[in-house]
Image 1 (cartoon, rainbow over the protein chains, first blue to last red):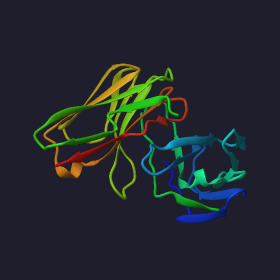
Image 2 (image 1 turned 135 degrees about the vertical axis):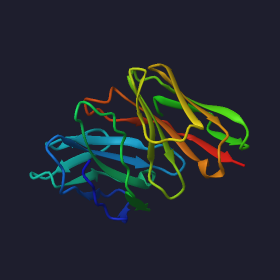
Image 3 (image 1 turned 90 degrees about the horizontal axis):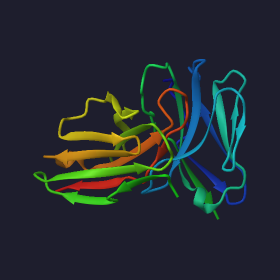
Image 4 (image 1 turned 45 degrees about the vertical axis):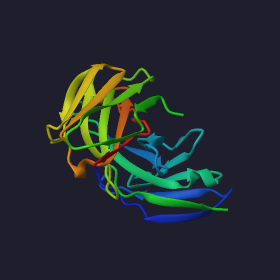
Length: 113
Length: 114
């Protein structure tokens, strides 16, 4: 699976959009980009994933660059409850393996009141 | 809320005890996973089951023994654990291991070994 690079921490004001970047310059054609977050003392929470096209759901939007070497997770109206560690994960499917997810250090997003 | 339920949420045990962690998913998924999260370390994959068959054992010591009686339930049997085994043990499930569908996690069991 390709490696990802994320900033260690970010601040965002409550009510504003939080934009979390992720670099994955070695991503290959069959690898998806996944975003999870983890709030202290809870399990990781799935947010969104995508392959090539931009994606949007009730939680967030995922913008993937045309060359797929980077992506941005957007929380459109951040609230205090969005304070968490956000993980960007790249994972491919060969059809024969059963790999788990590889979590790096993630970005600690702090929403300021 | 989560479709993956883990019990107990907290467990304290001595090194000579035998205990089991339980995971149940209500999502109709066919793949289930055990992960370990130690303090200040990334998640480590331990075991993977796909359609009740174990498909991955990530070099986990034999004092951890998984069991998957059906697609909805996953157990982790513990015996003769060491203090370094104290960690948050997370269960996850996904539709399967082949289609790129995301994994959904429970809130974990916080295990402390005395």
